[in-house]
Image (spheres, rainbow, N blue to C red):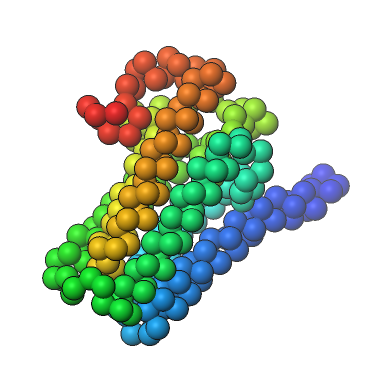
Length: 237
């Protein structure tokens, strides 16, 4: 083994640990919003939401840790090198998500929304499973899947056109939108749909802006965009 290799391996693990910490803290923060807003721990659908969130983290870790640690490291650098418009749009979607969870919690406490039938919650669960499965699939096939919009010249950034990228150009965003809309349905809150829709609108805006950036700055993307015509929904946009 070359001198200094253990040190480099240790350094390479730091971004992985950083990302795992970020994700764990986000789930804890979600729990605080839901249970703090509702004022009770006995809210079964909040527990279902959190359990699904943990399951997604486990699935992503199982997908990426064996051979895609560089993707985890890339996603650990949240905000580093982001374009100004991306900071605003990314921050806006994050705020919308936080507000949505808090509103759902307050809704559960104050009963703004009348109780919904069981099948409504089940539809929400199905949306979260479907959306997160698509997100994880996109994450697994795209070694340049980042939390920010940047051309990763330091990592040999190239166009990815396999897996879900054969059908739409931004499948990860499709998964995010399906999950965002499914969350208030799972939690049984009509009022939490408003921030969810706002967050989705910002994500669609981000998709359009990112697409222009990739066309301008990523070699080969213009040809890819001609082959795969739709950004988010085949036959629509």
